[in-house]
Image (spheres, rainbow, N blue to C red):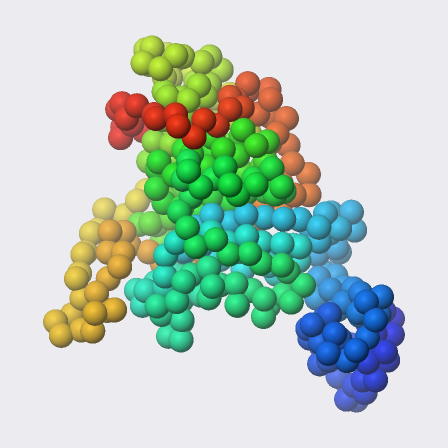
Length: 354
């Protein structure tokens, strides 16, 4: 409060009686506001620091000052800013991280309205990364945001400078892309959080966080895990590594529900809820405008379930930033540390899951 009052005095502010120091109007933009007043860089920094403290002091009270300082310096890459990714990015921006990179090639469709935080009437047709970046800058003027309107693939991942991030969040829904993201992040030695399938789930209380080696009930994550084991040298449930095509990927009696598999140090967000068997596919009402034709009629979705995935993912990213244990676990598990961009995985029988 004292720092905020000093900053307010520097700006010549007069707060209304009873207004308190919670929301001093001229501090709403930190350095953005003070630059226009011709202040020196040192003064701008002082005012910006005061504004940051006002916005995010509660995080320090929750996690402690050292953890809050790490958050303030953290750089996070969010790959996929649809349902799960957009809510996670919002939570991370409001957690005071220093920098966010948002990666997604898609634009906003009107049918995204039920589950994506940046899907508004005014943003339909815009690139998701651009609309979300604008929203997050308004929420946190201190965060530096880069946008990458592209796919995440074995061709584009090497150019992202993964080693420069404190954590990566994978919120894409393609099995092949997830496999490449896991391999690239493991090779780069960067903590990673992988979001599982939020589609066809409606119960936010069933969302859980766990290592990918032990997740059950999520077919998408199961297929990712199986491909990594079969084609890319990731360890089986008992810790052994089989060459491509050599026998079963889960050893008999190992990796079952009552006996955890050897963890990989790759955190995932998944749901204990069985996917809903109800399937209602509509191509849009007769005579509806083109944008009303559904862009994504494959799965049923609900904001409160998808948002729960996103918030759980953001919380896990914060945990990794504050005190990551995943890198030590990866070393213990002996994960492969080379990401070969030209390595073509054999398809094999991946659909059955692992």
